[in-house]
Image (tube, rainbow, N blue to C red; front, side, top):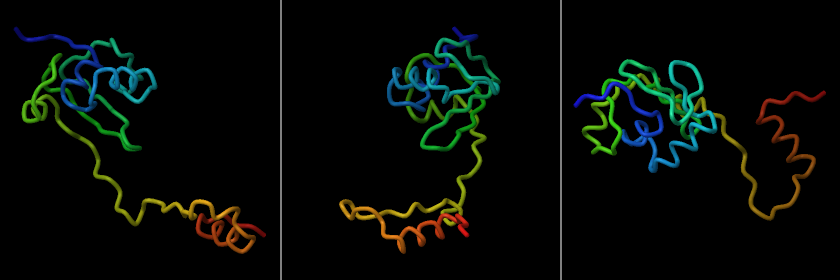
Amino acid sequence: MELTSARVDSWSWGVRLFKTRSMATTACRAGHVKVNGDKAKAAQALHIGDEVRVRTAGFDRVLIVSRLVVKRVGASLAAECYVDHTPPPPPREEVALVPMRDRGAGRPTKRERREIDELRGHITE
């Protein structure tokens, strides 16, 4: 029997976007899952051809639903359930590096503060 619709949280868990179904539900509640550009509730119906955007690790995954599942499936079957239109991640050079201080080093000195501001691109006059 072919499904005509499935819950967003159930589908995203079934195609292995989330480790547990409760994590998928929590992501929907937090607004990290969008269906066709709108924030999705966990129980929202999902149909073939819908665009699903899932925010994980600071980046969006853009998926087009090609097959509906409500139970968790193997990785090879999960890959057949969507078409991935996710843009490639930015090169490492473009990702801003956050200056890290050693734990317990205390407050930065005035000189260190100026160097941190210069790294971040803050202009002070």
